[in-house]
Length: 172
Length: 253
Image (tube, rainbow over all chains, first blue to last red; front, side, top):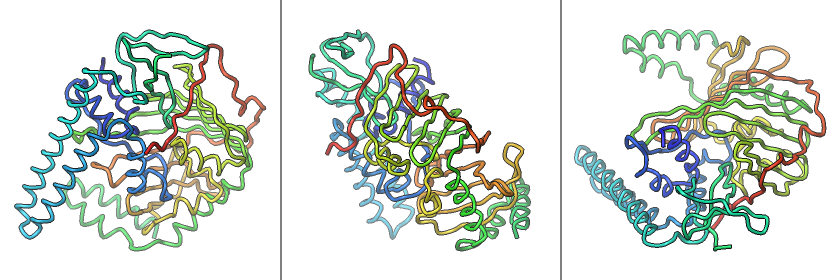
């Protein structure tokens, strides 16, 4: 998988938010992981430029990824609390914030690993959305619908926003 | 005033090499919203809203910030055909996607020609309602779609706290007024063609609340205010071998 493909898959996953990024990052070569992309529209509270809007969209999108979101949110609030407590001593606060950030990163990584392990142990839950099919899937047409069989996991293509994604479904 | 500001920036740009820039630029930015900037913007949005049909070709650039902080840039060429009040077609092709968007007044279709997948959904009866629905229900974003709305001025100016005329600029060989605006989470700049057809020629959006402030920019390379449309321009017909899929609902809480 070359870098562009990795970035493409990751960028497709961007709007599917944090967890999928975490999903992708372990496979990315050279430690490439994506942060966020630029907003393509201006204005109105409901658009991605709105901070609250981003949070809403992210929350709405996270279906299978609660573990990671929760852990990173917890880490973030820890960081915030740490920073607040240390506000009087700025130098210390900065150090702690940096530490907290590291902890958050570690927590995210751990959660990603946990997710991977969970997936390795059993099939992903029905309704799990992935930006790309795993290797070794076969296209199978049933009842006029095209499915992808990847071992004992079945996927269907779908659009999520502008992105083409794959969703796990029950065996047809 | 306009030339003064631009000259100040120019001086600051030169001074940047001498590390004097920050102070100079900071002093160059006026407080509040300059009425001249909003006047020029409104002239452009009103002009575009009054065009019953148009097509535009553009070059879009999207930045993504890696978690390392490094910025990566992706480019797309886009074409858009608009017939008010209820028809839109847009094609994008480039680094990340190859995608066509069809809206015929009744339904909205997204087609990935390379993957040969498409999805169709019923849509409201006007462009504005359709764009709202696409964004809020399906999370489909028409890049720079802000400009298509009839009330584009109000949308663009939502939450804007500062705005000023940077000066004259040239985009694709066309002389433009260069405006800069600032809202709580986003900075944006627009270049508007000078003269009787004040078309937007360039738009840059800086997402300030993301690390390293990635930018999206769109440069209009060709405007056509007298395009010839056929029914096929807006009506989706599935290419042979294309497979229909669903849109995933946005909200699963």
